[in-house]
Image (cartoon, rainbow, N blue to C red; front, side, top):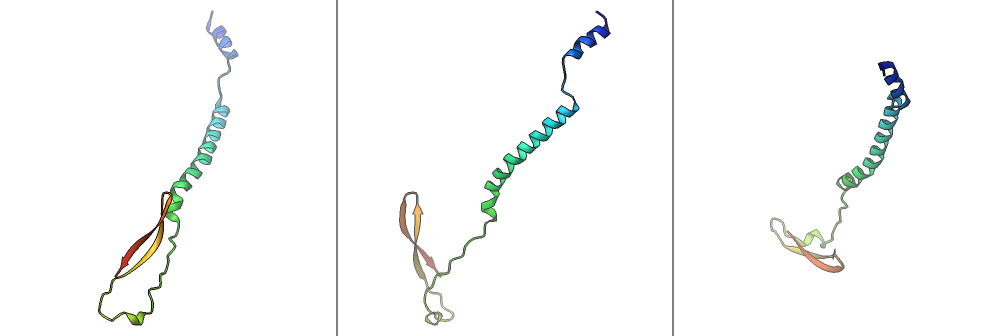
Length: 92
């Protein structure tokens, strides 16, 4: 068997060409982006979320004496697992 016959036999087996490689690469890239965007948004979104400030009324400011520090406290409800319970927080 000479070289031309060997090449002819190899020609029967189709090897993936450049077009198939590019098509596979593009489809793989699209799949990676479609999978990566939701995963990234799941990880990054909580860091970008603005905190919600909550004002607590301790009464009129006239009650506080200028130049003195007074300890005030307030209670709020905290959900810890299945239990809801009050927690106290001191404020200076």
